[in-house]
Amino acid sequence: MKESLQNIGDVIAEPSAAFARLKAEPRWGMAFVVFCVFTIVLTWAVTPYTAQLMSAQMTQTDLSAEQVAAAQTVHQIIQKLIPLLAPIGGLLGFLIISALFTLAARFLVKNDTLKFRHIYAAVVHISLIGCVIGLLNTALLLVFRNVEDVTNAADMKMIPGLHLLFSSSENVKLLAFLSHINPVSLWVIAVMAIAVSVLADIEKTRARVAAVILWIISILPEVMFGS
Image (cartoon, rainbow, N blue to C red; front, side, top):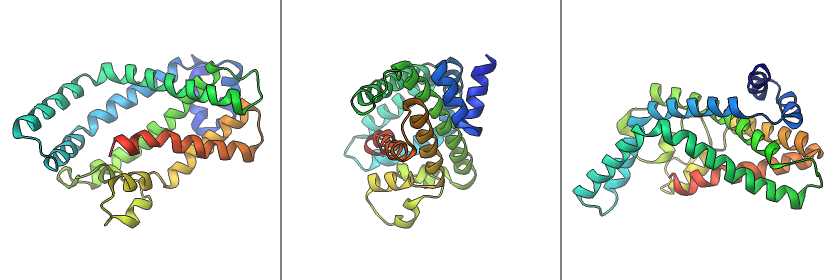
């Protein structure tokens, strides 16, 4: 328990130490519980905004009033099931991502000691950085954005990013992608680079390149399907 909590703290304070311990003993249970708690709380906190976003998107389609009402009902049901869906969705997502990264590592990294369990533990712990960023974004959203002002996914991105320079653009996917290019993304990439360097035993330049690629892959689903 103590080491698991220390790993969680060190992912933020001293990532190299955290990943060194995960390399020796890839524990992830406590980090997964923290991730689920954050996900549930943050999802509930932004429920009015996601409901408004869905309504705004529905008005731009040819759906009938009955279909819009049905979609809103489904959204309300999903919100009630968040405590159940968060751990299931998180577990499946981490498994898929870790499996893909493990497959890639077998072809790109000559390190027989790097196993699926190490990559999975690292993925779960790195997700906690996203939780901290989500907490910051949610706090800014609740303070500075009115619910009725949300018309697309980029409107929910409150951390200053490149999307602010192209606010007049109607390309929602482009705005969603540009919103991820912000100061805190550098933090995520830096932590990923440390994880790759420590777990795969590769030099820092290659680790940084790999981290950028992994980061782009990690945001693509949200950019493609969440906008």
